[in-house]
Image (cartoon, rainbow, N blue to C red):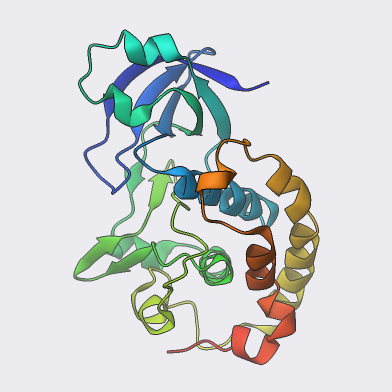
Length: 237
């Protein structure tokens, strides 16, 4: 059973998808993406987010929620139609969280940095950038912990490998994957990949026809660590 959105509180001014901050039936606050984000972004958020969970990334709780049509119809907001009614992607608000800064990067655990870097490389998510000149890390720090969010640009058909390795927030995570880390992650990734069919089944039927996302293509992409190991495991710096 899906969570129901009961109130539109505000809207983010940041990010290309500009999610809405909404209240759900359990009184929790969620950042919600709907019509404005597009169905591909919603599918990518769900599939990549589920894989992030399976490989052990600290991702804020997320779910598929439902926006009742009367909530949009009776809203006084001029932009309520950008949210739209029906099934949406909802990521729970992390209280007292701030986006990490470039100076924070050196203080983050190296094992976690490697895991985030590998995950983004695996799902082809180039949208986690940060250098001394700025960027868009899509990472939050809250009470000393890191939170990973915004996977809507995963499975990118226009993925630029050079740009990824130059601009990723954690491109300081070494020049090669440590063998112990690599072996452990390969086993974790295999187990996660086995869940792809069931994860795909979790997607709302209304999302997929207009998403332009193909199960076979996503599987082929995620299998690279085994089908093209030399290319996949080479850090390009």
